[in-house]
Image (cartoon, rainbow, N blue to C red; front, side, top):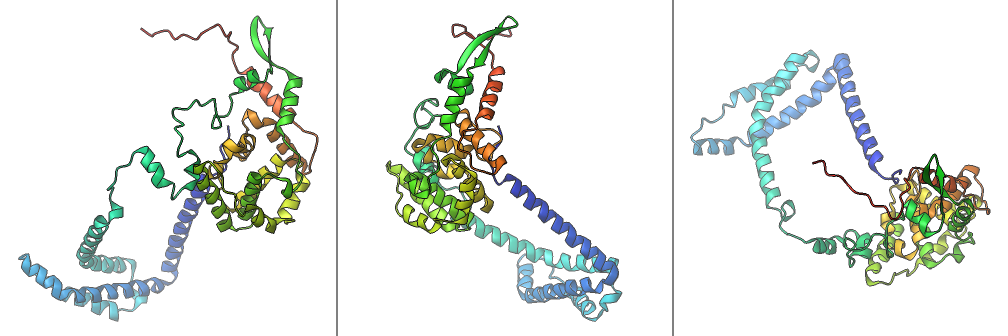
Amino acid sequence: MGSQQGGGSGITDQTSNFMWLIGLFFGIAVVVWFVASKYIVIPVFWVRLLQIEFLYGLESMWGAIAQFLHMTPPDYHDLQALETYLTTVDPSTVDWRKFASINKEVGEWTRFPVIFVLLGLSAVAWSRTGAQFRNSYSMKQLREVGKEAWPQIAPVLSLDLIKADIDKGPWAMARPTLSFCRENDLLSVKVVAYKKVWVLKQRPSYRLFALQVGPLWMGLEALPIHLKMLVLVFLARATGQRDIARRFLSQVSASAASGKLDFTDVSEQLKSFYGHRIIRWAEKRHAYVTGVLATLLEIARSDGVLASAEFLWLKPVDRRMWFMLNSVGRQTAVVEVSGAFSHWIAEKKLERAIKTPIVKGAVDALDEALQSILYVEESEQWRTISAD
């Protein structure tokens, strides 16, 4: 199953771009050195002179430290000779060997002050509370602390999903193919080459997948409030208004912990998008609510990652829409919304709204999936044989 749209490839691209920039910088530096080396020598020697001035400023302190530690004080005559050379030499006459030698000599002088500076910074960093692990949290405590930064987890804070049945309840996982077919009486059995195999009932499958497509799109005003909320977030992200999207996502997610979702001001804010060109564009290409919202989510992701986990509260409220939006960006959809997904893909290819559900792709995919599932009688049990 294909993965959702995320930021992994974006991070890789940025790293690659950074490495190319570094390579370009050094390439330009090499060319400049061979063409006109003085334009590199002048700024580098200027920095070295600043470092020498800094070392002169540390002369009295370093002498006291050397005396305290019974060490020989540094001889500044060599440093003065370096300073004289840097201020009198003609930059255009400095070859690479001399250039490297000067940098090495100045580096030998500056390494000790740099060591002390780094040790001081390390001490400061270590003394800061944020640099150390000072608290121990249980998973429950960690969730409570984390909800301030990630209010999206609020809907499940009070739940113990580890102990819950993954096949039951509003937070149940997507139905496996075989379980879905059994629950909806879509299976029959026939014998092929002396073996029993699953066979999909075509007509009931078409009818069921057509029902998955859901209600027709009747405009923004006709949407239930939770879908208005999603449309508002998608349009806000699509138009670069991240603050609006973030505010409403946080508001609804945080309220989910109390059991009552807070959709305050959603309808009022959505009015600013009535008649928006993005809505008009989507309406021409999709006839159903599922298709319009899936396309709006795709457009919203042009502004960056917008994972379905950011509206986790939707799953127990509207399971079909949750899985539809969760499937956007994947190569395949879960079987519970395969009909809606198939129709959406067909509309995208034809670039027009189609009111007749096109679910043949979903039926064919389900039939193909069943062919890879071994038929086992309900009375039979799988047993493992010990290798011993």
